[in-house]
Structures are given as C-alpha cells and as structure tokens.
Length: 467
Ligand code: UGA
Image 1 (cartoon, rainbow, N blue to C red):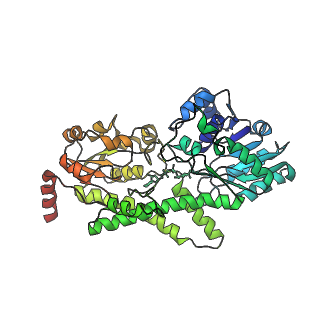
Image 2 (image 1 turned 90 degrees about the vertical axis):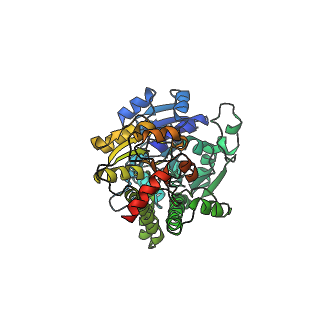
Image 3 (image 1 turned 180 degrees about the horizontal axis):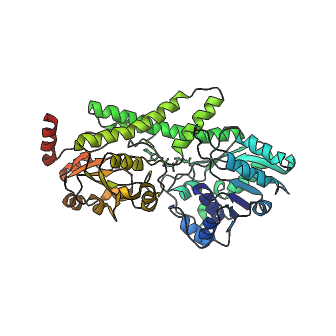
C-alpha cells in the first residue's frame, strides 16, 4: 500500500520504518529540513533498538523522506498524522499542529483516502479533523477518518509495533475498516512472523495480534485510558512502597504476592522515583482536562499525579536523611534518561532530582549510557559528566541509581566499592538485592524495602541518629 506518515518524531519514525518492513511504500513527511537531510544521510535522531537497521534496509526503497505534504498525501491511500500534541499551560493538548496538517491534506484529497490520527489526541479530534478537511474543500465521499492509537514504548518501539498485544482501529465506515485491515494485514495474518528477515520476536509476544475495531471516539479514549491506567498502576505500587517503608515490609514481596493474581498481573508494578517521559505526565493532564470538559471530575487522576510527584520528593528526603547535609557532598549519579533504553530526558524524574540536588549544593557527577548529550544541554555547567558508571562513582559520598538501565544492574560491585569515598548506594529503581549489596560492603537504600546496612556505615548512621 502507499502510505504517508506525517511527523518524524518517535512515533512517526518508528511507524514509517515498521510499515516499510511490512512491505508498504512509505513517504515520511516533516517540515524540518535539517531533520530530513539527516535522515536521508543515514543518521537516526533517536535511540531506538532496531530502528537504524530498518531505516538502512528501506531507505530510498520502501521509505522516502519529503517535506511536501500535499504531494505525499496525493500519492497515498492512507495518511497517518503523527505530529506532536504538546500540553498547553492548562494541561490541554495543543491541537494546532494537527489542525494545520489536516488543512493541508484537504487540498490533496483527489481520490479516496483514509486519514488516520496516530498522535495521542482528546476524544472528538476525529470529528474536528473531518470538519477541517471538509471545510477546506474536500468532498466527504472522498475520505474517511480513522483513529489508530499507538501503544509503543520508547526504547522498544519497533518490537512493540511489530509484536503488539493488540491493534486498535477506530472507524466510522466499513470502507475505512477494510483499508485499515489491509494496512495491518501482514501482522494480523501472521505473514510477517514467518519471514526469515523479520525483526526478532521479543519474549512474551503472542502472534498474530488481535485487531480490535471500534468507533473513532472509543479508540481515542482507549489511548488515554490505557496510559492513565498504567500510570495509576505505578502510582499505586509507589504508594504501597511508602507504606512498606514505614511498617518495615518489603514491596518486592508484596508485588510478587499481588502480581501473580492474573487479574492484576506483574507488569508495571515496579516502584521507583516515579514515572516520567513525554507521554504519561502529558496524557494524564490531557485526560483529566477531557474528563472535565465532558462534565466528569476525574479526581483519581489528580491523585495519581500527586503520588508521582511525591515519590520524587520522598527519594530526595531519603538522600538527605542518609547524608545528613547535602551542601558540598559529591554524588555519583547513574542515569538521566526518564527510563532505561532511551536517550529521552523529557519529564525525567532523574533529571529533576539532579537539578534539585545541585540547587541544594551537591556536586553531581553523572553518567547515562544514551542521554548524556541531551542532559548536557539541559543541565549546563553545574553538573560534571563521566564516561562510565565507575568514573561517576569515583570519590563519591554516595552513589544514586536513578534510571533502570540494564548495565546499572550488573555493575562490578567490588570495583565500585574501591572507587567510592563512602560505600553508600541509594537506588531509586530497586536494581539490586539488598543482601548482595551488604555482602559487598555497601549500605544500600532502595524503594519500599528495608535498608541493608554494612557494618562500617551502620555505625556512622547510628551515631548520626543518636545526634
Ligand atoms: C508509555 C506507554 O507504556 C506506551 O504504551 C505508550 O504508547 C506511550 O507511553 C505513549 O503514549 O506514547 P513510554 O512513555 O515510552 O510508554 O514508557 P514506559 O515504559 O511506559 O515508562 C514510563 C515511565 O514509567 C518511565 O519513567 C518508567 O521508568 C516508569 N515506570 C514504568 C515505573 O516507574 N515503573 C514501572 O513498573 C514501569
């Protein structure tokens, strides 16, 4: 099929590359000339597993890059809109990019096309896109609108796209449903999974995926409700972790106990320093706003947001209580991205904590496997940057683990121990077994689990408590 994807951000780029891998001819449209030039030269602007390989494989063949939206739309049967919907000050999604894309598409509707919203949008957006395209001269018989929310996570976007739990398509006509079934046919028929050159199957993938056809409004709500539910799961376990800390229970054991109930499930139950990223924080605000507009005061979402922010402050208080005073303390910080596997620092709890600790007078030396460049721009000169985890830890009064990178979960603990000034680790992501840390001579503080104190620092801690 001939497909245009408008917007070459995380979603657009992954979507375009994956459609090309499914055998479609894709034109990726963006109005940022320098981004397009970089993509044409083979550069990949984001850190995303398998994306460079897919772009290399299809560049100039099944995937082309263009700034000419109208020509791309004319040449395509299906046009995916994947431009940004940033939050405005009030928390509503800013729909102006979507509106201007819809306006431009209207001039290119010269044969039947399906215009698909892929960006995360409030309910009713499909009706607005339809109105805008009609208002600008397109014949109503010549196009349909579909909503096809994405559920991809940064870092695993390609495998999430190609091995999804489900594909949701919201349409209002049978004709649009048929077109969308063909778009995803290579996945739903299982054809893609039989190919020798398919992107490797991740654990847990069930193929072929189910295609769920709904109304456009339901599909729009499915996206917001999914993200809100996942964020709620994280805030819920973070709240439970706080109770565990005060009563001396272990949140890991609690997670095992509740997560094995198949109605609850074990995933997205990892406590930590709170969720971040470009999706959950923005989408929760937008969903709350959508609910309010429809007359429903969705206070549960406010509580989810409040717990999330509190979780970060709680961790900061923990650092303070372990180190007593912060001014002048040297901290080795491991992780700046909002989660492991990505270079994205948007709304990263790790970055917010580093800013706060620097404000309080700590000397931070940070390392992240992928987000260093972006973090340097955001943090400026106040923070030192290391070339690896060990360099970040050198001479540190304490080491802080703030992002759940796999490489931080398998550090050479004896090497780390020999480098730090004091063997204190505060783990905001629960990457280690507390007993193992104590065996290796560390005092180890994590989230929702009893601290493991090694003898050396335990005596210092006891002195401090007496004081
Ligand atoms: C999220 C959703 O998971 C995707 O399904 C959705 O498509 C995407 O938003 C989107 O709307 O575009 P993403 O933001 O990439 O994906 O990252 P997640 O893996 O969901 O993690 C979000 C945050 O929650 C991270 O800061 C992560 O560290 C935190 N998290 C996640 C936890 O603290 N605990 C967990 O158990 C899981």
